[in-house]
Length: 438
Image 1 (cartoon, rainbow, N blue to C red):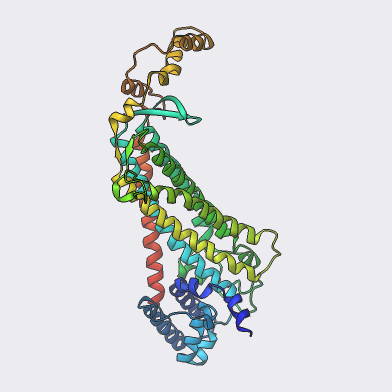
Image 2: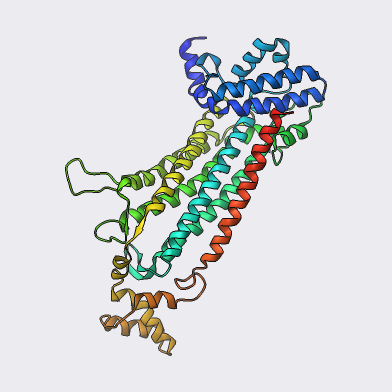
């Protein structure tokens, strides 16, 4: 083959596949165990294969199993290693599978681990945000609509709104996790095999929630499930980008409601007085990168015919990039929130009298004056009234308002998320370890 064609076909696959070595080996052990059960491999052959696949994992941990372009992909590299070490036994391991279902099972296991780490870290970010909201629950600040001062708000209301939104994002991530948690092994190239393989066995060994049933759908789900994962990550990214925008605005000298730690700011190359919120600006900008990964994936599979096509290879990189970007952004945001300072006096001072106009009109309406008349009375008063901002926000006691944020409920929800993800993570790691000890 012309070297230019080889480079074009392989692309960045060997670099990406380096992250899949462990999962390809673990899935191969499960597959080999199933082949032993149906008589393709002897017990001795299985044990030799298991030993060598475990050895590859150890080599990979020490950066001594590096994929090269001539290896084409992780599957070929591992199979060639096994054949060199074990001869015909190494060649037998590919019986009843295709590289199509191999790469799918690798990506499902890789995504499963990454999603669990993302969910764990996002739950912790929610916890950090909730602590910030609790510390500043009744610190009054202006609320805005159309980027103009509107009504009294509070730091607690503002920050807790992001906690609730991110908790909704966690639900989306669990939906993506559940869709991803299906075993594709045994679908081969998408049309099954003529031998009596046991797909339930490999599902149990690898700890998948269920078998992905229809062998053709297994292949056509590639890219679909990746886009679902990226879609959920995009919602997280949008929320973090919006919070970053708020922090950029509210930490500016004109507002000064919050102070960013100096280690998260950079100076200007020409203006000595400047402290720029570069970390937050980059955080906001990375939302566009996540959107691009999602669009790249969904656009690749749209209008694609049934069955496997080589351009499905191009959904691997945006998936892996998106998972990595999400973990990075959540980690950085957690650092920012831990160090963020609320300037209480500045926030309260920002609550000028006109912010209370709607509340005053509603007070008149409560006394019997039609609201539209009350609205007019307050408008004509030129806002000549005295208000206590903190008393105002504490007085709004209906569900979800500044005086009744339900922060204890959020704490319970976060605790439930932490318990659930830890249970799933422990079960996953236990299954991965158990395969090596079969």
